[in-house]
Image 1 (cartoon, rainbow, N blue to C red):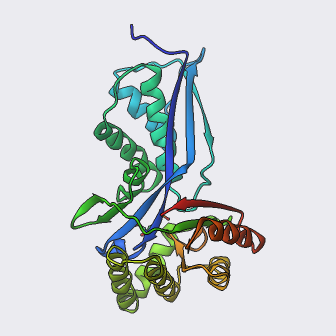
Image 2 (cartoon, protein in one colour):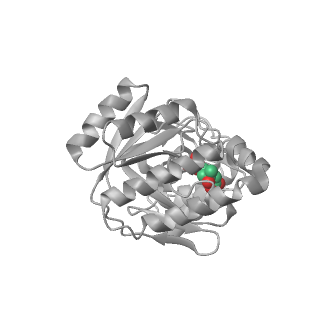
Image 3 (cartoon, rainbow, N blue to C red):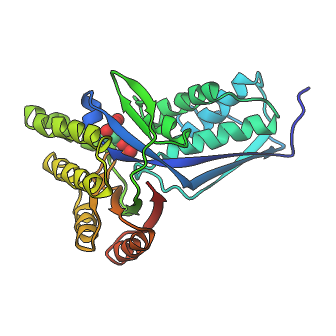
Length: 291
Ligand code: PMV
């Protein structure tokens, strides 16, 4: 009989895409950034009823992937999630929830969990949440460093030190990644030059030598994302607001048609001011991270 804790606890952080969304679908690079202060916590406790697997539910799939790995076929368990990660905003909520849940199960049963096994189990849940995940969300939610991803070269941890502050602002509107990806596909050749530029800008962001240049690259990317029709009115408004209030650059982030925008600030004070202004102008929530 395995030894169990009274409560198993697992935590995970969220993520945001810095550059390269949509272009990454066509083989170009994307850069994603871990949001270490935006967290999910899962608690696992004993229950008097058996836990049932809901195969359509990513969280339930994560829990059962962990139980199966531990060789437990009947679990008298219950779990709860406390999350500050809003869902469907391109912040990796489903991956973060799965990571926290798997960690909580392993903690409850006091079992060791390697990073490779964790990633593998999370991706089982991610296949339920998104039919064909690249694995970028899971990778970034598991990493303390930014991640570069392309289909050809896979994942790479980055030592990105822009020397600025990133403001993340939530429009409060669900991002519609699937619809946006389809919209870009429908554009066919018309989208190609923009996707190519978005890919180039993601590479350029890695070699620029100052925050001003990084910001410029972000703003250029936003214009290409607008051109392929994946931004939204509120995202455009928040991006323009950020620029008018002195941001070094700003863009929508993730699949789009809602979701979050990001803006680059030269200092922490400026980041705080920008966050306040963006909230006044319609952002539901903001976060600040050093970049
Ligand atoms: O909305 P997010 O953060 O899940 O990102 C979607 C990124 C896309 O490039 C639009 C789609 C994809 O599968 O890479």
